[in-house]
Image (cartoon, rainbow, N blue to C red; front, side):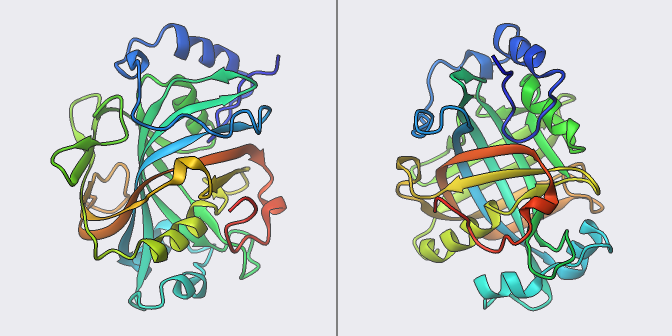
Length: 302
């Protein structure tokens, strides 16, 4: 049987070994989670030979200076400002919409083979003109905090060139913790005890859920790249399955350490808007980035 490909990143030579280790030898709290509040994968039987799963958590737009974003992406690839201004017409002209993803990866499987759930937090940089065609949008993901004992996720992410911060999460078995009736949080701590990322969001009815859905549909379906000359991760996030019911508008605070956001001192973002929601996904690893030329919207399935 073909070995399981981790849906974000892939190490073909080690994947069977990592899978066995992650299932049989993972002593972490995450590996002992007996149940989850996240809906189970609703599309596994529809796409049995593809990597599928559910992503549950919080997505948020982090406004940063456009000049800072260009510096982080690098001077070789310009940022497609017109692409995001069409989606965010009121966004300040000198600012750029970085993406926070604070997620629980749940019921990921292919060919009937599961991998244990895990958590991750990242700051991501969409609307990058990777191919130089002034049209195709790609998403740069240089660093992630990932559940330390999820060996498939950690090893696969590193294989793509991503800087991985090994972390424990609070909560350890869910996408977020309910601190009150309308407030949730997720905290990532490094193995030496530092808090490398924390999020705290409160439900807010002033957030335009429909507008943010359009923004996140576009951004999260942009192909992922990490390093020059590498392959891309092609993930389709589906916003039209049973996993995607009732997204909730939120406003809150994000604190991120320099290890995950490469500016001196990291960053603190207040009053940022986002959505608390889940989506199904279908993913293909190791795709030539050139084959993904032409992306400017959500693609098929949405």
